[in-house]
Length: 632
Ligand code: FAD
Ligand code: NAP
Ligand code: SF4
Image (tube, rainbow, N blue to C red):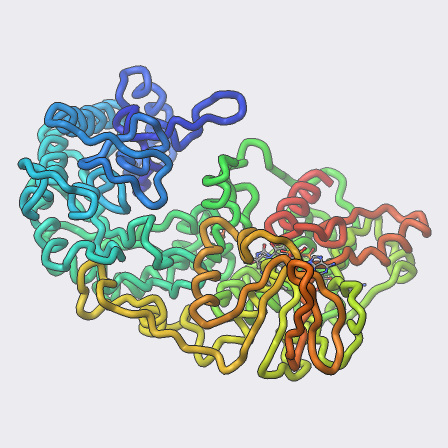
């Protein structure tokens, strides 16, 4: 069963944002006219033609107070912490209009060939804001008692069912644990689940967290299937099938959820961006070949929030299927790829799949490049999966592997390659600070690999992605909470067992303080960590802040000596008496091999960090390599 992205039932419930050409963004889509319905028909016809057994449901998403829209409406004029506009309070007529629009949208969905609708009743969007006292301050029949606050959701389902008749799927998406201080109690959730079932819902889908809450539910640091236990509880209250979601990224995880009786259906979204063939590969027992969603959000949600076309870090074809394509080559070449980091691996995968004879070299004994460092950071264990996927691709497409081999230009010339792709990555930047060679200075590679001892008092120079990751690593005690649901719950102050209001009310996060004192610093005067990903950066900032890491900005580095790190802050001298200074000050491209190949007149391309190290991340590296390999 496919469920579409959110489509608003009216103007006020959606997004009024457009791209640079003034076209509404996909997320701005609404369905409340016959003309719009005709557009949807193209989608449902294509799906049913391709897969007659496949159901497709339209997700009806009224964003309420979170609508990016000056006409935003809500039960009360309460602006969300993350809302762009203050919503207008709905009057009785306005409420009737919203309900009628949901019903009409569902009718149009049915007309357009959908098999059902999913109505969003969670996350801080319109329906859920009626349920919670802080966003519903009404005193009429739509506010006050819980029975009144529940009325809007129940009415929407009742009227939708009435409009679409019996043989149509109506899914209600419930906030099974909203993670709000003073949010919904378990009893209220159970009551709502029963009431919407009674009103005509044919399935209930469990959603966790309001977007404004401060508990991560989809980031890579969240354990797999962290919330399915909550779904199980909802399942015990109703007789209709119940769907679960969040951090279920591989078939075996989904199978375990079903086997444990936590849910009747498992919903996945991002894993389908990472690998559009996930279901097919699972059905054919080709799990090793699945390109796993690593929950980084870098190319999906972070793009969506920046108004960019959604894609996927590990699969740049996602949402670019009409522009990024490749088929068998008519002129097979003998290609050497030097460097088995994300850039080299993705190039080798696509080029070899197309029929080129590819040989992949890496100086290291294992493939993965810097992902082998990333995977060691607590909370980034999913990076193992990307390496596993590429390993499977190298075998499948018969790439000749030369690991543990640092090749030079002459060897490549002698081997008679038609073309060389240089993906040799980066070398860490050694900033020009007097004392940079002092024995207390450690590079981030040595710090992560544990090659050099790290003292009790540490200054980290550079607060980019790697500075944050290194700080996480050196301040982390015990097991990674990404691998332990109980530990994760404690770390974020969530009580799964007793389910107090919102799952979090009165529960203090358990902070495992580091016995290290750490200063994480940068030269910019902006808040430390501002440049991290929009949808995940906050989790890293919160965790390190709670652990007592000192964030220092506007630093001018003066020197490093036996006493520690000497700096100027606002022109004032200050000394951090630290035992260790870890350098995470960005990188420089590693281009020596390319220059040598050019001298020898060899046909060569540069990709990944070797091409451009500034702001180079795996998303850019994989994207660039895939495009190039698709065209060679
Ligand atoms: P690399 O991964 O550096 O690979 C280059 C490879 O070339 C290496 O394996 C090296 O051994 C090999 N090589 C070099 N010279 C030779 C030679 N002469 N012969 C043979 N082999 C050679 N990016 C993100 O997008 N998201 C993240 O969350 C993220 N987290 C990170 C966390 C850490 C701790 C680190 C260190 C990096 C992280 N990155 C992240 C950055 C990301 O890993 C890099 O952008 C990416 O690996 C660059 O890919 P690449 O293939 O260009 O180079
Ligand atoms: P980065 O994010 O560009 O950060 C480099 C840091 O070094 C900045 O804090 C910068 O801050 C500082 N710096 C730069 N030049 C310096 C100099 N000459 N002297 C002292 N400090 C200097 O790069 P990165 O942390 O090395 O990460 C590399 C890439 O991997 C980035 O693209 C990053 O996005 C990606 N990555 C992503 C994640 C993730 O979780 N998404 C994690 C790790 C890495 P000032 O200039 O203000 O001092
Ligand atoms: Fe998953 Fe990251 Fe791809 Fe988004 S960008 S789908 S989180 S792997």
